[in-house]
Length: 281
Image (tube, rainbow, N blue to C red):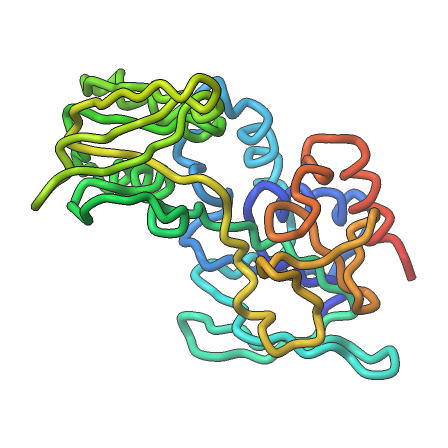
């Protein structure tokens, strides 16, 4: 199977790229994502006002005429030689498939860096989770706690805090710009956290039965290990000012790259860079 363009990742960046590709006239495009549905992490929150732009892209993506392989994971990438097609190994529910692509767009996003990745001292009780994990539990109708501390440092955590309050939980919103968590206490389940103000050094403690916390990202680039695509020390895909990788006809955008802040998916600059890549011969 050979395609003009393969987009790995059907989150908002991948879907935006697919919409640009369709408007640019590309016919033979494949989109791959390991989730059960397109939209990426947190898509169940897109009806909330914080995600108006994301919801619009998700709704527009219903008009895409391209194949979308869900529950499918890229497990290997092999750069084409001497201008030949790139090769991608994809694990699907039907088994492993080998596909080829003239051009590849990497939009695989990232996971949240949890408490362990930030080396927060304390015990290891139950009830500590990332916002992505909390959203997943809520999607399956689990009640995650009644007295919840949430470390607010993103649009996702802000929306999640609002949703939990609407569900009747007592929510303590911790401003991630102002405080840092210094200790976690609890035996079988978390019972208290200690925090410190980043500016004043003032310390405080708060009781809770659940902590929703993450700080930083873990790029989803495991499938590129051993490939020729250059990654930095944090395993981000290294790209230039136009989103191009070191491999011809391979670009990357979004939080899987070393230029996450530069390529805001809603900016004209990012849209133009994606369009320029898609339209290049």
